[in-house]
Image (cartoon, rainbow, N blue to C red; front, side):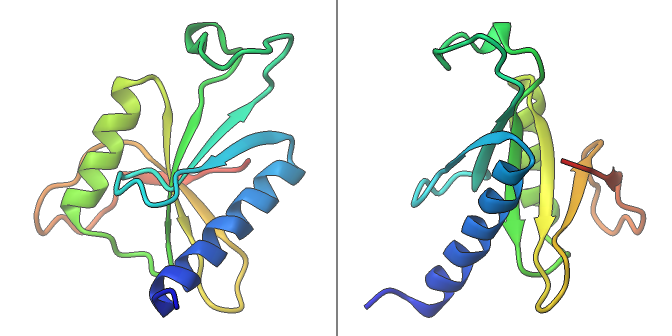
Length: 125
């Protein structure tokens, strides 16, 4: 039987996928990847039929980390931000609190230890 935390996290990732697909995104869940990215999202693929031509995408891909609480460690934050921006993707944190609408926050920079203000803005799919 799967771990209850895995099942809970998977449900949140599926919910994020479902909502983004309703907005016109093509999504992929990176199940079991142990990477900073839980969901990859591509919007407005235009006439492209192959995803291996990322440099020709009309809009940048979105790399999403799904969390059930807003505070993530500085290390997790910085890894997601650096990996996404190096690949030309938009780094987004999806915060899934119980009985609330999913909040999407775009990461704008790295975080330093004990830094109070988070470099992020709300992101709309």
